[in-house]
Image (cartoon, rainbow over the protein chains, first blue to last red):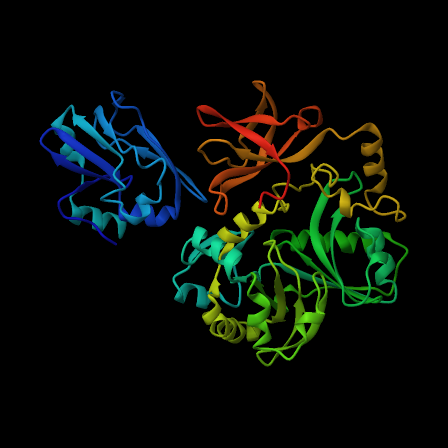
Length: 126
Length: 360
């Protein structure tokens, strides 16, 4: 299971990459593996506000529907427009081509609630 | 949770295990879509040992089953298999099943895993209330492992492990003989819509036969397939699954099983209710829907027509073959003749076209 060190993670298995005041968000390798073949992705519109801990989208595999939760509060700056046509990129490249959206971080204090890679590794090993 | 004789092998092979009908079963090995497409193109091997096997034996076995089930056993000769169902007196479905005729005095019913105990109790009750005596009902499920070898390459793979003349075993026929040195029932049936076989073998031989089949089929692309692919494969073909398209609250006539409901074969359990329902006109119909846009229909999602709710999805998925959302839906009779519907998926409605079944 791949858990890149430079990323932060949530208990709902989203990852966050912070660059300045912009956060890129996706779901972890563990999450995509648990879901199985992803066949549908629903993302918010650019300009929408997402709230930390609240669902911002949906990922569906053949067997299951999963909400995806915002790891941080902020305005959606960009969404991955290629995902709706190629949702399987979440399986093949969860930390790369399978990214979901970019958020302008509204409150950097929320970053303190995210796990680093070691903590996330320990979390999924339960 | 009950375990099949292949439980250890599934764990070893890294299958994802889930609870299904009281059993711990493999839902996927490599991935549902890959397994699904492999069955359509080459072949897949399924462990379906959770299915139940009930034997009905005795001089009046034929007469008893003719009354207990809705299809006509007179259409069947020794060595043939028939798709059939048990109904309650009110016409609701107890279970759907495949019925094996060894001879007029011995039959085997292959029933849904979660329904095995219910079916067995139901048959015992029918027998107790019937004029038939000298009949033995046996739940033989624990003795059997069941493997489904399915796909266009299934016959050529199986031929490598048996002396049975498979060309003589036509669809919905069965033979008894050895496969991989193990005596078993070889039935040319399945739940995928592809050519293939269902093998009923002694539970203790399951591991050996499983491994030998995978080995014999490796060059043809044979790979294990789980319940996830079993469900998407059957759904693409429009096959009913008990608990979804069929239940105690759904008549077989509503669920596209009119073709096995032989109302003129003589009396059987449920016949009066089904005749009455037919005379009054059925209230609902099972139809096939295909989404015209993105999205995945799921069981229980409301089906609308002109903004009005007219029914619900009984089974839905993303079709791996079509790469589109497909659904079976039970809708009001009046609405069923329409051609365009919407399916309510969370906060939005998605347009779905009625399509002729099977989807694929």
